[in-house]
View 1 (cartoon, rainbow, N blue to C red):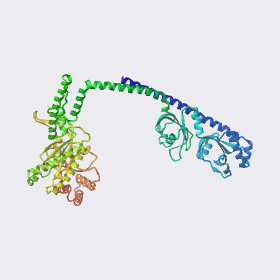
View 2: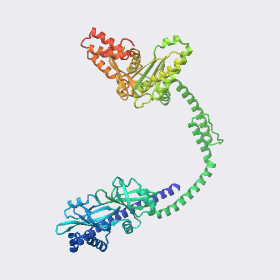
View 3: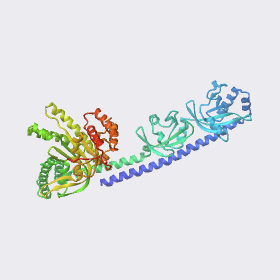
Length: 621
């Protein structure tokens, strides 16, 4: 019943509003037609009235004698007879000789016509006559301009009707309930309201609106003024530098007044039916729905993680049996949650979710993954200096920081291998931007070890140094091991290469190394190319890079280093030695520059064969 009544209510509302909108659209189109016809009719009347004075012989004689008093008197008499609001006599170049608006100022001072550019348009017209909309003394007029022949064109007669509040009210009276507002383009920007039939509160709101200029011409649109909805249509008129717009409006609320009375009746019936339905529902809940509500609240507790919650329904029927089954389900979920929590402490939460959400089976799938290896350098020597308990606490402290950094960048810790961390980006969850997130994690790991070392030095504990290797490739990701004991991990040549890159950090004296494949997929960071190498156990050469951070200008020595590297690979030994020497002297702690300097000096003494391509073969891991 409620659905039927609600549907009827909204159907009546929709039909009434559509009907009201269509009626208003028709009325506004009709008003716009009346407005244009009024301007056309008044324009013709103005031209005819101006032509009458232009053909008056006595007026021509007064003009020939430059009798300004007689000319002003003739203009005033003609204006009154023709029921016009302004008349002027202007020279051919647009200077005022005399006008009815300023009778005391009439002389031969030749003041400029207040509507700029109007007389240029007259000269371009074929008839020498013109109709226009212009502003004179902060008032808007519909003007007609005709030449005065004596017998050649000697001056222009200007006659005009005032477009003001009376004009707007007369137009509004011809179209009942239509509000008329007249606006003119400002010289700077925006629109200026100069006549309206709206109440003062609505008029002030309209004059300050910035969206009037966006209304499409001769099309209706809904706008809100002072909390009321108005269907509005903008009708442009006039031209030149300051065109005008007539904004025709009808109140949608006023048009819907009859519907509002009907809607109140329908709404009363709807509310009465709703109260009756609520009363019936309350009686049903007391007798039937109460056990269901108890089960619902219990389900919400279980969904919130309170697996120890139990429902109490003492009924010997199907609902009582459902309550017993519900409590058994809670016990099972509590056991499963205990297993999940334990598994989440053994492996990363993402991997735990992967293992629990799928059927456990051996095997995997090929996917592109970015692998990050991080290892503590000289860990064996560190163990000799510290007690075993201190070593464990130090490792756990570092692993906790590393895990926070890796998870913050969307990666997962696959495993801890002694003092090393193996992390995955792109598995088991396929998140976009795996390579870029891995590089960002590597840079933050370097920052984390520096922060940790500050505390270690303060406590008198030896500081830690790490190496990081990152590589992106296709690997096999899945559950590996035996049927009774398995581990989610990734295997493949890419994993081995990431481990080899981490081992090369100490050789090149850097904290992290990424492969060409990773660099290509993480272009937002700046890099320094280290070398082209063949790692142990791998024949395919790979270009390796040191990530510097997001700022490409972080290292000012990069341009000189690239020149030295190009000279080295182009067999320009002496130039390479010169450039690497300059780099090594500027940064004596950089092992990379000293390494290339020694390698270049050796090649200069014993040049390689013609097949040499700059690839360095690493014989150790």
